[in-house]
Image (spheres, one colour):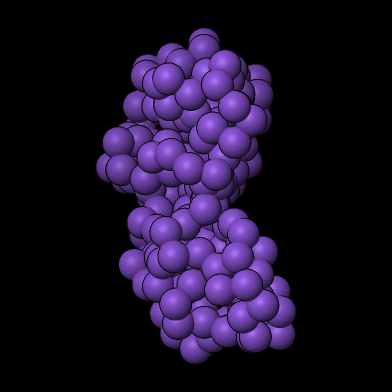
Length: 219
């Protein structure tokens, strides 16, 4: 479900390193400032267990003003304001006291009607609720989430295909996979207004060794 929100197209590590000024940058990451541009808030983050993205979006769209959809192993939670068309108005211990009319909404591969029909709902009131389900029932992700608040939305999911440190790097040396290599241990690019942070292990191509107050100490 990390793919439910596209990573910001203008937020790439090599471009940030080259174009921005850095308060501090040491070896694999730092914090600096640059132009105000789209997105005003955004991120693209990956580590050994998860991937997450954040981007700006329109104030009101198919997900309303604010929304969330979370899967946590055997737990499912959903809310949206204004409510999803066709969603139930009141459910208590899986009994639809005020049932809905069927939902046509789909986000990515998630079909809301199917998820609602395959979850045992503890409670659902007007615009949100939570329930339980079998592990990965209906092929839902084991752990994943989507959230939107006004003009910012984000999603996360498990990173199940990370092959770091890479074949042949086991039992070699302590720097294997940390200072060089093609597989990513962790990487993050983030922005809020004109402030940027970037980090990557192994270091991004072209990364500076040491910068302080926009001055290259060790290029």
